[in-house]
Length: 281
Ligand SMILES: [Zn+2]
Image (cartoon, rainbow, N blue to C red):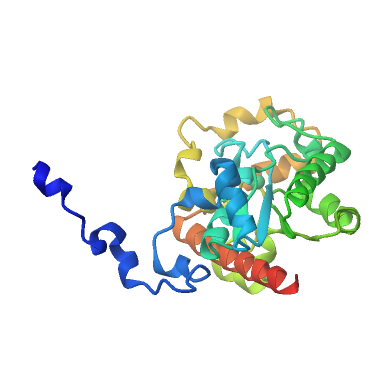
């Protein structure tokens, strides 16, 4: 046993499938050729050495800053949905570009004053939220990042961020862009996959399908009785109360295949967007 272990290990066992892959000049094509642990594209799971070396080698070219929310998602879906969904899209897109892109720590509370009459919602003021996103972008800029895609997963954040981008670009002096991940969805794509012809909507067919495909453990239909809960919801605006009930019904149309298809489309779209940004810089 000891003798066997002290023998030099043949190179092919040390490198596994890598041995068959071209090694010279391969750092930009490795993602297609080998397994990459999902951790490797997450800034907050990396060490300072890993991040520094990725930047200094020139391999890492862009960061995604996911922004979401912690807010009510009707009776059945976890409040972290928007943050979890956008982070998943960001991570998958970054993996497809590995090692050119990484994902910064998500901003997990957004601008949600319109849901404050539903218990559990957390909301930041517009200026607080924009200041947090800006400070994260500024931190990355300080470290030498030249391309940042602020990627959004919550409707209430979209307009303030779009309006703030020229100011961000001017102050940071780098290529910083903004998109919501559902910018990937054309009317044709939505029509093809959503029976309600709606995406993103709120905690309805689309978001519930996304969760079924990506993290079914965040869906909790057990114990849900909308009719019984309705009188206790105290939703002030009658239109909003009608939508709430409608979204609850529409969520029942969710299906795993719909979520899988829509996630794939979003991931590919974000990857293309990042490639464009890298090419621009
Ligand atoms: Zn949502």
